[in-house]
Image (cartoon, rainbow, N blue to C red; front, top):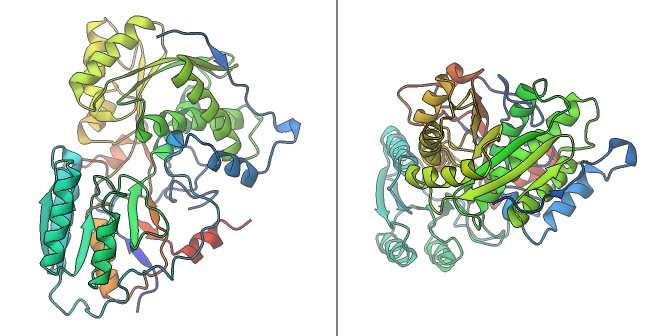
Length: 455
């Protein structure tokens, strides 16, 4: 009987990369991104970095301050260092069926409108074929009412497991209880975090703050000598100013840059979360006031919101940003689906990407982005592999049917992320994959999570 679940990598050549605080110049973070130490030029506002000599708050108190922020949009993926047990939350576990029985999975997909969603479902189907499961799927096209109807159909069909790529996790919460009442366990696959009392096995999702953070660490390590004594002028192309990803990834890259730069300068922060407090304040001021500075480190010159995630929208937003701030050193693109348009617009402005101006992306490390990294047009990108929420979820189901006790997993299980960059891209480039590969990942129970983050 298994008592732990390990999700295998899709490529055996992928090396496990080390610890949460390690920069990603050839190494990377494989711990859950949220886990505490483990698993328009308007008036400029300044945010001064914490001084290690001024008795900074402890790591836990800094994390508590962040978790108490009213505006949590920039903090996608952060969780408390201690989680309460969910063992008493009904989940239709343990299962009476095993892998010796015929198993049918109902999969409610939010969309199949981009390669991220198609790769998620494709990898799930491949795993189902491997294990002999039947996969039924419906696509809601981001219509929550359509998804409700599709879930009802799966319940009528009496599937053995229900997987929901939720259009609106809260709007469909009552259906999770209906499923559990019928003896059907439910697993949600992002993009929004679940409440602890939702009757779910877990929600598997990416922590968008962390994907920005690992990129920020790499940028500091890569650029610190070139910008010693100078502020890096950074602009942002985001999709929507009111979205969590559009806030969390920029906040992450600023926080990661400050954290690593302080370490390189011999004046480290007391903790990652102290650096994140400064990064949070700097990003929020840039977002709300148009620009922001962290004296001696960063000049956040401004941002442009594309209003969507496609390349054409990215090109329009980049045009606005480049016109307003032609002297930027680096453009941070929230999601790489915007990046082809950003690169095109830079060229039309007579700017050579990677030479005249640097480009980095917060996610998702699609193959075309890796091609642009190999070509030197993009410096780095955080990963957000759809295989965790596809093949990885089917692996979780297989382990449950093999006896894995999944009754006390966190409500939200955040997937690992790492930084693909000009120094390590060959290590992660697989021409047969549409995205950078997933790493080995062990899902933690709540007891394991709490033990890893004790103290």
